[in-house]
Image (cartoon, rainbow, N blue to C red; front, side, top):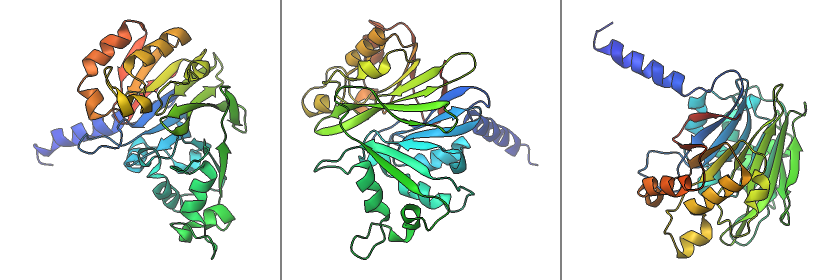
Length: 310
């Protein structure tokens, strides 16, 4: 082996290992830490909940997430549920490619999918799946050749459930078959969209562990704090700087709102994700604003990073 090649191979080996979450314990992996922009070197919004080396729950799956899923070492066969905060492209674009990729795996169990209700701008969970994969002559989807995943023609089915307006209450929507993992949601506002924030609770021998993913939201409803009560890790979307106004502020919460939610809920750690150029340019100020009210662990996510939920 050429001497100049050895350091390169060692570096690549270390990088590959760094992408894998530990084999024991509960971890939240950020597959995609970016938004809808390009030129940031990030995949769009996507998260994996790992338990003892297996990827159990997927939340969002935007552009670039399929490659990150592969790099993470996750297996499609291990997924027990998938949830979407909403169906903007940067939160859902790689889902159809994931389903196509599953053809080449041994997956045989149905995959439950959860997402918010629709309006004139975006589909619901049920209509999202239908519009992608329906194969009837009268109502064909974008990719009807994959209709077997909704009509039973393939080795498993996608089973969508639309979570309607939770009316300001935390709503449990799913439990794993062994009862160890629970998915709960609450309705939040992403501008004109009724989006969802998600909470994943995992029963462990020592103590229950939980992570909340805010998704894109203004926090104008004040609902998020209800979902955060008693949680360990708070993944907060950091899409705008503190001084943002107008449309940006109607779509997203600023760092000061992230701080208020973290402080009042008593979470142990905050992970900033879904970065955009405008928020990254003001990152140090965002951290200062959050630190005024929150003294727990504060991390700025990059793609493929794993965070222990404890």
